[in-house]
Length: 148
Length: 407
Image 1 (spheres, one colour):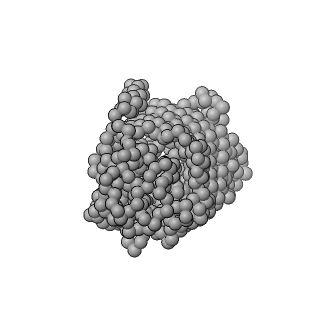
Image 2: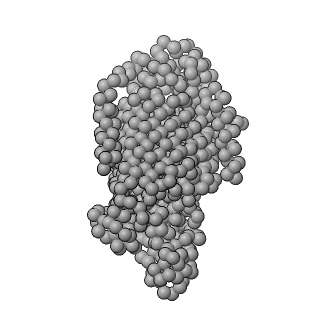
Image 3: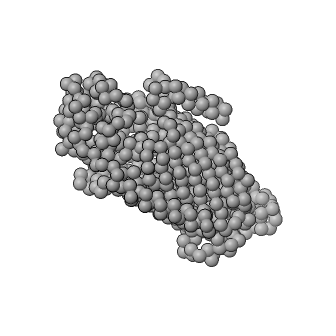
């Protein structure tokens, strides 16, 4: 019975810890990152729902039928801000979500880069690709897409 | 085959560990991923669950797998995962094709899969093999029963899937599969059914045409999703009769049927930053039957109506530490939750008819791709204990720890 009480208390503690910590992460702003795409992508703006569907692997083609290639950063403030404000997941939740797709054979892992410059170079060279970098890191070789 | 798979996983782990990202290997356009997981478990001495000899403490508690996927065109890919697990008297590190199928996405709202496909049951069934993909070591057992992992987790056949955006109403993701359930006669599931009927050792098993379905609604409320999933199948086969357990003390052979299983799981998950709250309700209806060749033993026929529910909470404190807990109740007879019908089920005590499990898990991610977990369970009732339920105690505990490397 003692163990039961301890475990029940821990269950409550998990909930309370979560509730207490809710205020800690500052809400990410769209200004923290910019969406970049290959210049042959016809869209110049996308809704948040479209971007969420794209980065969850649910939307795999642009409206003109060309395949979408998603590209992500491995870590960093822009990575966290983009995932939390657009995809609605923390980096660890996003990582876990894609691993579930990979370990059930449903999708291949998105191409990931540890540096914004490499991501931008890849997007510039790959037709249909889309990613994100910190604001100010986009260069003329790619187009930027605004969020509707 | 077992040694070959283990060698392949270890080699791949080695390559992944020295690669720059330590996350995947690509050879000739084939993506290779895998996992290697070893645990230790200790349960109350007479409640050997879910590892056969866990009462004494056991290292017979591992999982490993490796998968290969190849994109043929942007719309067509093929893949295969080999996996194995050990839980003492079942699993036994036997290498099986966990899933293997071709996938053609015609449109985002309609795709086709053919081959061996994991059944989309509840929040966790499809990806339950890889321990690193969740917080808990043992998931709530009724919906994710370890004994059923070798048989009731995949369908061999074909299916459709898709994603339908609904504007302000969110997104609907669906899957439907039809085929046969590739159950095995020497696995944990066969042992479970043989044990429920009481005196059978399964020698053959096959399924009728089976259907699985899943509907996920990603609601307009940020972080909230709801799932309704189901499985419908009938399994049957032959068995030898254990004269020591047979009511008439006779051996011989029998035919058996696990008839008209209708399993539904309804799930709700809410994510708020690092806090994830979820709950699931499961409903199972089926009939167990057996007929005996000896001409003396009466036909066995038992209609089962079970249900279960659970609430789960997980919270990630930082990059390397996460805590989770769940409470889970299972009832063998949902019309008599006090266990009063235990004699009708040929059981010994009312508490053989329920399972109330409180679990706490600490998960550590000390370095990329490595996960360490420590977990405790306090359990009241012993419905899920398959081996020697008559001697199992009413109250028990499980302590488990596991380390997993995946890439």
